[in-house]
Every structure is written in C-alpha cells, then in structure tokens.
Length: 166
Image 1 (cartoon, rainbow, N blue to C red):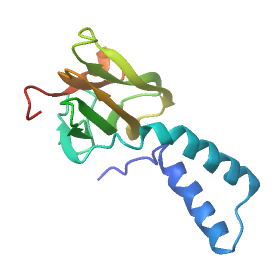
Image 2 (image 1 turned 30 degrees about the vertical axis):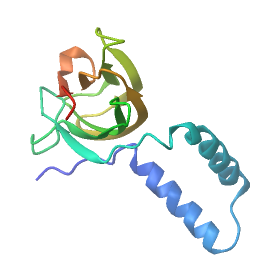
Image 3 (image 1 turned 60 degrees about the vertical axis):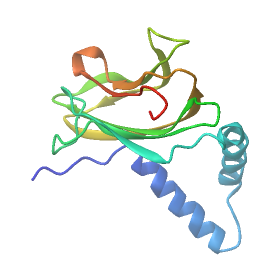
C-alpha cells in the first residue's frame, strides 16, 4: 500500500502540539500568543456559521483520495432564514508528477449562478495524494452547489443542494 505523503495541514497539528505543550508549562510563546489573538479576532464573525451535516464530494478525475472512494467532504447546515451555511470543506487531490495547482472551493448560488471562488490555495507538490481543509464558514441564499477543483484539467467534484431540505 502506498503511503500518503504528509499533508500541508499536518503542520498545523504539529504547531498546535507545541502550543499545548507551552500552555501546560504555564506560558505561551509571544509569537503563538499573537497568532492566537489574531486568529480569534478573525474567526469571531464566522462563529455562527458552522456545518453539522457531512456531505461527501464524489471522486472525479484527480480529485480523489487514495482509495478513490471520495474527492473530499464538507460540513453544512440550513439556517433559520433558509440559507445554507458551509463550514469546513476537505479536499483530496492526486498528483502524478510535481506540479503547481490552485485548489479552489466554488459556491454556486442565486447570487452567483456562474460560481464564486470562496476559498483557494496554490500548492506545488510532488507525486502523491494530498488533502487540505478550507474553513469557509459562510451562509449562502439559494445555494445550488459547492464544488472543489485543482484546475478543470484535474476534475471537479460537487455537492448539490436543492429545495428546503438541502
């Protein structure tokens, strides 16, 4: 079985371990304290928009996990005003050779029928499977779909929403 290379997101987990260890010693390094305060201030407006229901993104082209069972998943919920809140979107991408690709999360809604890129990140990665989590935390009126891609040549995977039940 092929080992999945360490994802860029794993570094965040490593950094959190260092923060936790410093906090147990009773102090937080100044750079981490500053980063934590900035992160908390930026996250405050998004606190009310978290997904609670998981939806799988189907595998499509190079948007796939190693077992080819999914292209990722996202968390969503319907809000009181019938909008759809999108929380975190997890995306898997397979690289066959070293390449630079811009991974994007695109929302299709009544206000943006042609699609609106709501999160993106460019990665230059070697051959292998990788995943990344995008914290979208936004509500959309008339949301019809959320899609992920790492350029159209790599494929696109979508979760479709319709009617009051999502």
